[in-house]
Length: 341
Ligand code: SF4
Image (cartoon, helix red, strand yellow):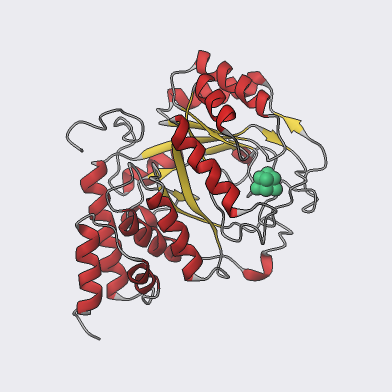
């Protein structure tokens, strides 16, 4: 076994560590590294060092609240909230009392943001009402996660108190979903143009995805200036039509988290991974999503009673890996955390 890194890989890591952002072909070379090899660990160490340098030791936690459960007619293949999955046959919105209780619990737990997720067929007006309600009740930053929008709707989100929106061009967009990638990108442009921050993740990664399509989405996040953009793997819910493909492991996810960190260079204010796990916390990730309510990965209507992990668990994982959830968020502070950048 060689104890040396190949000069080519060492050069890419050096360029990455300088926050220059790496090229597509360089990212592809990193993604092809053997999983248990010395170079993969050097890659993960480089990404970890970059995040600790830029984000201090802040561990971010953005609380996912799935506002409604529905048999969504848009039928994305990786989602449990679809008609074709047959898990949820009735539409249901969590009560305002429940949403308020979750939001207050998140605020008390030091959440850095509330991510309000709706299914693709949920009323946009109702999301605005919920945003206004939570905005009056808690001080935590609001982020929307909903369908494609136009400029007028983007301005409505801002007026309702949302600071940003999560939106992804998903892997297999247009193949495993009925949406056109161009329309998703148009929505991302809308966010920028109206002054909403854009949050992203390369998702939902499965073993069937080619490295080229994964890297292209990493580059999209850098090009459009995502506040964060890490990696989420696809979870095969019971009966998922994607089950035959299997799932990637946490270690494979950590390697991708690291590549994505080098691609993002100087752009992000945090680096995410989902679902919460340790390996990516030593590969550049510092942002988790504790979750309750509806989840496209779960067969339970409230993922807080299913797969979803809570603040106690997320904080514990972060502390074990040297990330401090009690520090102020870097994602939304105007001047970012003092002493960080
Ligand atoms: S991912 Fe969103 S739009 Fe697609 S089926 Fe699930 S809820 Fe509907």
